[in-house]
Length: 318
Ligand SMILES: [Zn+2]
Image 1 (tube, rainbow, N blue to C red):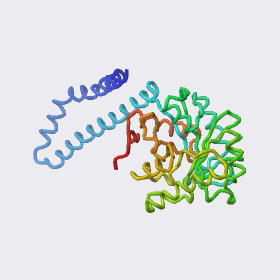
Image 2 (cartoon, rainbow, N blue to C red; image 1 turned 90 degrees about the horizontal axis):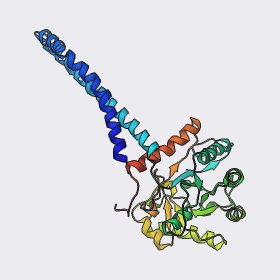
Image 3 (cartoon, rainbow, N blue to C red; image 1 turned 135 degrees about the horizontal axis):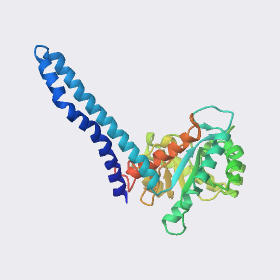
Image 4 (cartoon, rainbow, N blue to C red; image 1 turned 90 degrees about the vertical axis):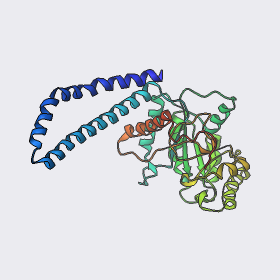
């Protein structure tokens, strides 16, 4: 089915592409004659003039092909949407802070509405992992709504918006920040968990795991998990890499520390072939162009999944 679509795209390309070429062919004797005659004595100018014509034709052809391929890709994503779990990455949801990590409650509500409108069902990371083991069925269009860092507005602003729409969410905590001003408290975490929010670790101190010794990295992921579990929260199975940074040593450490999965900042869609310790996530910063920008970000992840670009399939080699 995919082949047929791409042929269709090519065929369309041929029709439009050959048209200017035929025109050029018809004019060629005249055009060439002119250049040939005028070329005597002023060869430099006319050679460069001829070169320019050739170059601009090539450039036009190139631009045309880029447009055609772009158009074909848009059609492909719409007609043959790639399968996989979409994971969204948020940080703060409020009207107070204006930075690259804050989405306003109005904007967040509109985005959750858009997801529902587009047929998405919110699941947890654990739902996805259970489905991978054949223990659960996934909805047709699954989405995981995640929050990094553990800001208190996740409880005061985001949770009511999600609950109103019957949507699940996952919050990744920096455990040494729990209870600090602006961050979630232990009581809020217990309440969130009761209300169906999945909790994960974002390490103990939010330091990039790739910029410390392996023992220190192990400490960061181990302590944060234990801190939450000792406080009576459910077992922590999922980690979010601080600053999205990971390397080939991380999956092994996480496996040994009894984590089942980790999310990155690499965009794409997650299938059962995706390395569970390098799950793909689509970042959602505040938008400048409204809901279209939100949908475009999701589209980009779909396009990358369709093309199979940087989709973290299989185990990490380097
Ligand atoms: Zn973070």
